[in-house]
Image 1 (cartoon, rainbow, N blue to C red):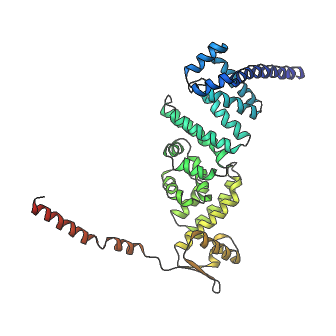
Image 2 (cartoon, helix red, strand yellow):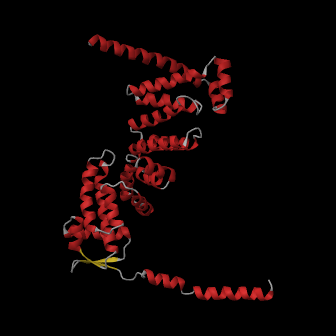
Image 3 (cartoon, one colour):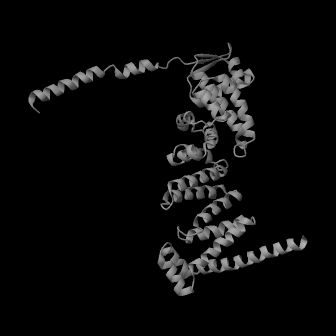
Length: 360
């Protein structure tokens, strides 16, 4: 067994050395000044390969050595070298090359495994553009590619500082990716919903999210929490679902780090909606809904009123939140907007009659 293990290690070392030497030769050649200048001018043209063939006896297939070395380094866990070689190959190989797509995905995976989130975000954007521009792929193949990008994107979006907003922008607001979610992977709605709940731009996505959730059969405590509030206005159900959300989030690799942020924002949503549909709210009752002590709930409400820009005040003496009563009812707004329509209609009719009379 020991001799067999030594043989395997020696074989791997030999492959590593062979690929490494051939890859280094290619990279060294492309580092030469005259080659670099031609690459800059003719990166995607036949002129580049004609120049290399005439001056360096270089065959295009030798570029594959760089890919194979990068893949080997990825397989053995050396992601930094893998990233460098795959990036080199991807930047020089034509888009229709045999390993071009593999190099793209390998480059993204290498950055994720190194936790280089800025670089990984750039790779996601580059992959998105390349998928959209891949005219040789069928619709089904494009759909599969987008589904793969959605799943790989979870690693990036839940670790990059701007990642949560990117989930909303890409998965919810970009129709090709929303279509991929609904067609191929509706379970991704869990992560879109989580991103909407914890995002400071929640109002930008909540209406579209509710519309999508009502169209889909996929359900889990996180999506049901949002529906219980924004569709059913059932606060008891929302509280029950929020408790279930805690268990779901604690056991989900991608969103386990969002638990405190999700809970905080979920409470904010509950209290904000509750205050918007009631004229006067007992702080004790609100504390029960938020699973807080009354004193803590009062501080919470003060902060919520400030953040949500609500017209409300706290009556600490009597233990109430009193909502402002200056808002105009919806039916009154409708009357105000339409009360002059008959005057405008009569004016238009008079002008038409006048033109008909004059023969204009």
